Length: 122
Image (cartoon, rainbow, N blue to C red; front, side, top):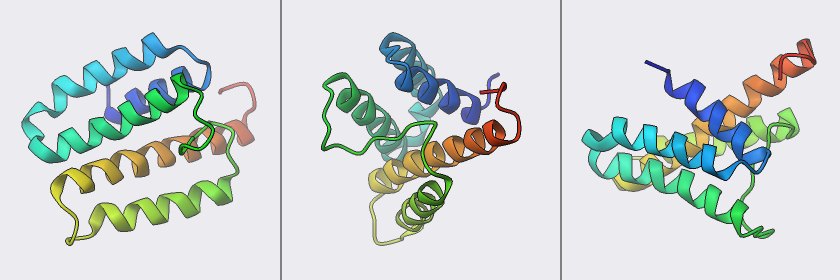
């Protein structure tokens, strides 16, 4: 079974290269895995669907994440999204939503760091 981190990397790669059908397939795989997570899983998937929808619509005002973001910005975003994902005052849906964003940012940061160490890997 493919780890969620690998699926998110595939999602980001597909999103960054405008391969929307591939990104939708990743969401479908995650949806099957997260069915039992209830509201949390729904929030997680909504974050991914929102990013995909904004990219498809070329919405320049929506939050966008790319694999070539500045690592400093990525670390700041990861900290911000992580604090929301852990906040007990948020509903499960919201915590799932922010968890997806935090994990996507973490995956982008790891990919960026790997690219800096070995430019041919990503």
